[in-house]
Each structure stands twice: as C-alpha cells, then as structure tokens.
Length: 209
Image (cartoon, rainbow, N blue to C red; front, top):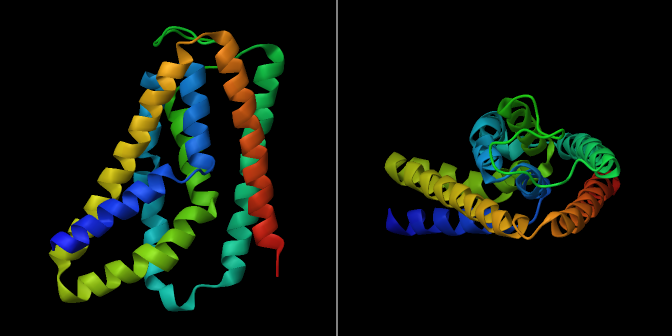
C-alpha cells in the first residue's frame, strides 16, 4: 500500500508543477483578483476529472486517437478565447491589483464563473486524458485488481498532492502580486503569451498525423 501511495504523491507533484493551461489560468486569476478568489479554482480537477477518468478506465484499451485530437483542437480554441478576454482587459487597463475581497472591473460576477472556466479548461485540455490514459489509468486498474484500498490510496495521494501544489503556486503568485501594478501588468502579458503558445501547441499536436 505504501509504495502505491508514494507513487500517487509523486505523480501528483509532477502534474502540479507541469505548466499547462489550467496553471496559467490560476496564475492570471491570482494576479488579477488575489488568492482568495483563485484558491477555489484548484478544486476544478475534482469536478472535471470524473467523466474523464470514467471514460478512460472504461475504454482504456480502445481509446481513439481521433478523440484526443478533437479534444486538443477544442482545448486550443478555448484557451485562445480566454487569451482574447485577457488581452481586452489589458488594453482597457483592467489589470490593476486591488485589495482582496474588493470588486474590480475585471472581477467575475460570481466565483462560480471562474470555476466553470477552470473546469472547462481542464476538460478540454488533453493533459488529463493523456495522463490518465497513459500513466494513471493502468496503475489504478492493476492496483484495483490486487487491492481496492491500495487503488484508493494511490488516487488520494495523487489528488491531495496535486491540489496542494497548485495551492502553493497561488500563494507564491500572491506575493508577486503585492509588488505593484507594473509587475502585475508584465506578468499578465507573459501569461497571455503563454496561453497563445499553449493553444498553438495543442493545435499542433492535434493536427500532426
């Protein structure tokens, strides 16, 4: 049981520190609205991964490459949509950091709006599909056949570490946010460029034969 738990923890750490559209979204939301707004977004994988995991585990041996390509194209389009929204905010000047809990022109009407975006990003990104299809899925299936408790510990170790790593990232970015509007503006422009690059990579990988 312990080796599987440690393996789940290592997988969770690797997934948390690997840059992706969800991590970039967390960073930009923290820079714009503060950690109290962004910290809830780390729960998005718990809401989005259920259907992904169920599908992957059911058809693990028959997963279609065309499905992953379609998901990659949709994910790239959605990331570009978010990048377009961030670009418009930067052009309008809606990037200035405000005290946590204070409304701003760029703040979503509800925290659920940002959470829904984070869930959509995760579902449309190929990361969870590929990760569960190639790494997590086979381990869980093998562990479940030997011991259901071991499989549960593996998944619990993965998600607890994954969420903790993302929470740590939010708190670290919060410190950068306190450096002022100039630093936030530069960081958001970098985040915008990263979004565009990730969208391009998603489309490139999806369109390659």
